[in-house]
Image (cartoon, rainbow, N blue to C red; front, side, top):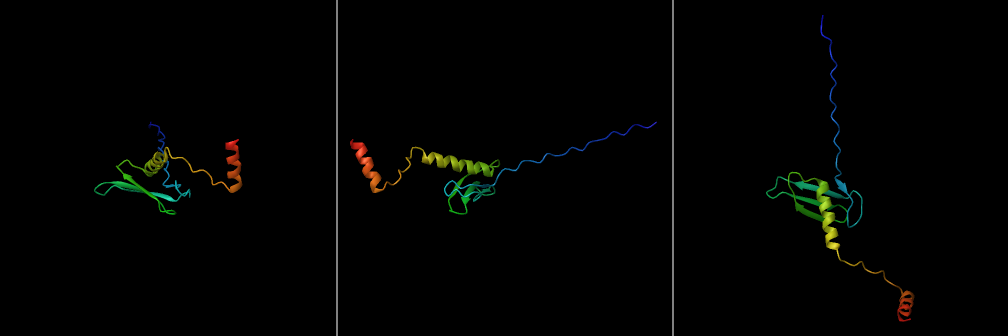
Length: 107
């Protein structure tokens, strides 16, 4: 008598989730306009995030584990840090609003 053949199930590899590579520009707010490039084969590895619409860019050091999302996140963090403590400009008031405001302050 022969041995029964057992079914062998083939292991299916789960598809890896791909991280985004195109981002929204923090300056002009165009979606998908920021591209991140990582240059590891240079003498000093670096990464660049640049907007194709307003030509703003950001460069930082890179290493073997650097991903485009890391570069973009670092750019956003440095923008927030630069804007920390900066007061937003007040809207321009027309003549009537200035007079009203002046009388409210006086009275």
